[in-house]
Picture 1 (cartoon, helix red, strand yellow):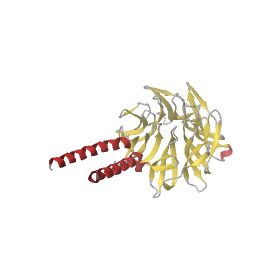
Picture 2 (cartoon, one colour; picture 1 turned 60 degrees about the vertical axis):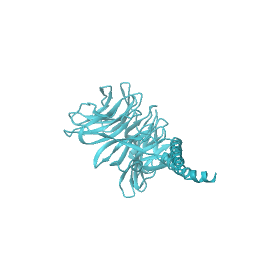
Picture 3 (cartoon, helix red, strand yellow; picture 1 turned 135 degrees about the vertical axis):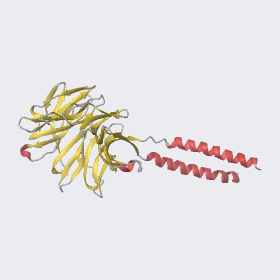
Picture 4 (cartoon, helix red, strand yellow; picture 1 turned 60 degrees about the horizontal axis):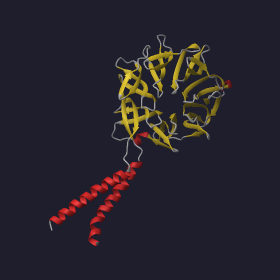
Amino acid sequence: MFKSLIKTKPLIIALALSTAAISSQAQAYSYGVTNVGTLGGEYSTAYGLNDNGDVVGYSSTGSSAQRAFLYSGGVISDIGITGNTLSVATGISNNGHIVGYSDNLAGDKQAFLYTNGVTESFGTLGGATSVATAVNNQGQVTGYFVDSTEKERAFVYAGGTLTDIGTLGGPSANGYAINNNGAVAGKSYTEGYAQQPAFSYNGTMTNLGTLGGNVSVGLDINDNGAVVGYSSTDDGTQRAFVYDTLGINDLGTLGGSSSYAYSINNNGQIVGYSLDENDQQRAFLYNNGSMTDLNSLIDPNSGWNLLQANAINNNGQIAGFGLFNGESRAFLLSISPVPEPEAYAMMLLGLGLVGYSVRRRKHIQTK
């Protein structure tokens, strides 16, 4: 019996150490990186992402034009928005609605809604410029246009109707995000240009305040009504914030002076970028009260330097841009699958027992 315990003890220790290592690995929150590529040019940037993992943004072409793209099923394609040399896709819904803007022959930006190969342009309310920034699953669009007095105005476009949603008392406002309930986030001047704070709009425009400065910008809103963006502070820096039932809250930084939040999903996960302690720009994930450099969650030998995360979907995928081997590229991050530690432990136990059985059989045969 004593000899039997001596023989099996190393196996038990090995299994215990292996199980502990696997448990530690399973707790790591890591991502695989997909290079979205380009439309033949030198750079690309991702702005929008839906729950299907489809990415939109813009890319340079071989002729140095800048074109809106859709990345879907592993393929990047020009969505064919007509214009002079510029088109940019800013958002995509789960139903495949794509929004953005392109320039016309006069050089003015024109908002578009692209659905199943059909491009819909919805003009302005008096001026020459309009920009669509986001679209929800119902096909409602927000953005901003320039009116006849050259002031920017936030809008909602739905059912063929373009509606000015007003301001916080000042002359202008910009819409940057719309959730599936039709609520909008953006920024607006208050009366007399006193401040330019972030707002949320759901029939009524609400001033979300700032982190001590005069300016804040709401860049995304999830279906729970939480808004993220950035705000000036009383010391003149810019800080990422989330506005929820607790009010406006500073998300902190990765050690540097400034940070910017660009997207929030329905699970409360937030992405953006922050300066680190060396004043280097780093894409971040904010989750469960903690900000993490996304570069620490990918393979350090991948060749990537993730600079800015612009979108996160409800499955935890993240889109943005960075440097891949020194070249500017759009990326898509997907959570790397990690097997359950129990499954690994059982596999190792089986292998260990097989190995022990083989060694014991050889020992018996040589006696």
